[in-house]
Image (cartoon, rainbow, N blue to C red; front, side, top):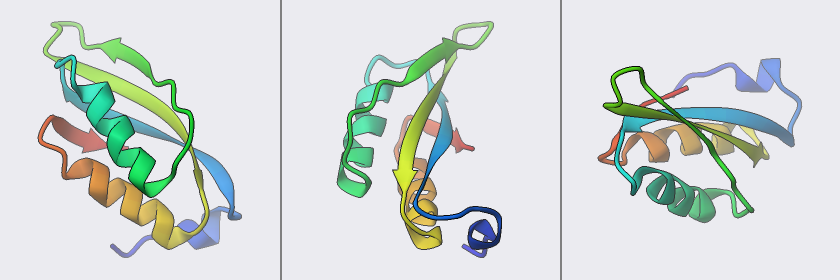
Length: 87
């Protein structure tokens, strides 16, 4: 992943990740469980359903420590089966 996070942000910092995935009750738990391995913390995502109810959007604030740390979070969360997009 070739990003410019290190030029745009001062680490450590808190970054809001938006995760869009299937409207499955397991989606928040799967995302939080993966986050716990990457950036342990106490997460309380906000969840917004899509207009037709097929998808959910989760917003989570995560403390990131470096460009590489941030990139690994994007990569690992995107690998989850229920996840469609990570912003």
